[in-house]
Image 1: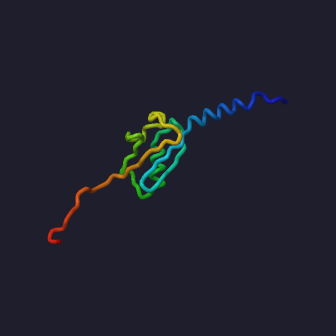
Image 2: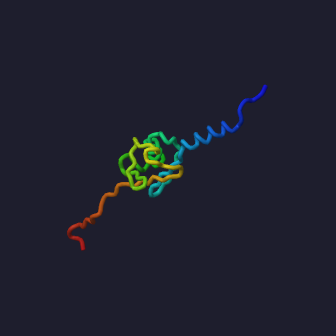
Image 3: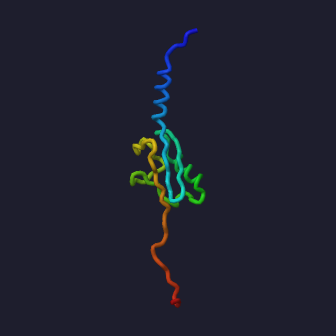
Length: 106
């Protein structure tokens, strides 16, 4: 029984699949999360992974930025022209900026 084809076709298909996958890193003040996903998957999957792995951060308490642009869950890595190893930054919303003084204290 003869085997048809060579291993070259299989290697080409593996390379094509690998090109469709990217590993994206999300960094926050205290945590780094890496996730591998398809170039056509919605980034909401990555945002959900972030919130799951960083339990002290809740939905809506921060913003995700890639190259200075806000990342939305309905974006895909292909939409943002992301490459393997790219980084999305997470910034928590901060309250404050004004100091309050109690009257009568010196």
